[in-house]
Length: 472
Image 1 (cartoon, helix red, strand yellow):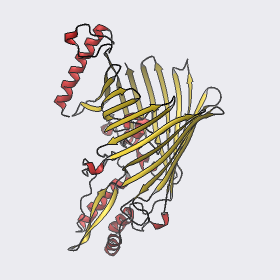
Image 2 (tube, helix red, strand yellow; image 1 turned 90 degrees about the horizontal axis):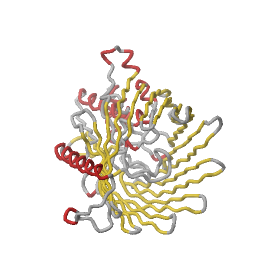
Image 3 (cartoon, helix red, strand yellow; image 1 turned 60 degrees about the horizontal axis):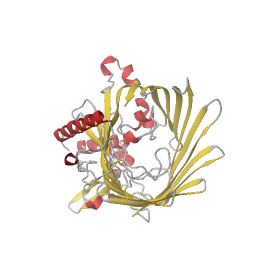
């Protein structure tokens, strides 16, 4: 959608909402000539959102002097417009920021209520599963990995780092507590991963350095780009989910067919060229999942289990991720002195781990750095395994302790994320003051541990963040 169309749409919706304010946000039209609504359907229009001013500073910039310190754009905003009747509602949410594209579309969808059926179509963020965050069943929307850690520092909800997707969602309710859902996503978008800069992961930097080194040595490797065209129906995804309540427990079961959001590397050999072409792939997979939630002995328990089945059923195809199982278990509970603990463990276990190839991007990069041409040719001919050199399991613990003071207006919170196999962690203390619709937060993020781990690779990104937000 072009900027001009978005601005015109924004003006139109503001005009409509102001008219609605004049008549009290929930009104019927008495003039039959000016209304196309069915009799008895009242139109309700609402506008809400938030305005935020925030600054994020990094310790390594502080040590380099004022000329290296950049605190970001400071301003950000969100506007959400909703128009609804008893049979339908339409919602448009816009992100506002002082950049080249000051207005961007976050969500925009229409929902129709047809008895026990709800039908939703449009650009939407949809959550499946019961985990607090990063559960294995929440697979519909990819994440913007460039914002995850700074958002985690002072926010409980991570909806802002989800990328809305075009989809059709249908749900049918039966009984008092049962529902079946179906979703269709006509194309695919992977995780948003920075290719350069502060939040580019080590593997992306390794790709760039490897290509540069190969070029200097006269070896032509194809340019690796994550901008693969995934807009065709060949990348369509779909899923079904059933949820119900039995006694004091909530249960869910789901099936999803989609694409893994992490890129893989494929090699294409040409008989006239000894160096194969390297391509970015996004592997299709099937997921079968279960989830459970219950309050038990004062613990609010949540658990998920998923089987992710790729086409590499033998485990020896280096361009395809091996099948895996993943699970999460978490709970929250009030402890003592008003202290609350929120805990979650996530783990992924690779199947056929012993079938992984010995060649890896890291090994290829090391051979290029050392000028070992025989080693480079050997790896390229035998193949690169996208999971080569990685551990059998990937386990992450997340724990947050919080306590509120001054009639719950002031909150002290500390969250810790620990990668067990990598031996690294992220510590995020926060001081949050909330008064009615105004929220002030002072927080930070401190990375430690193995510099080759998923968290430890960002040890130079320790930061402090100050934000002031007004919600309306």
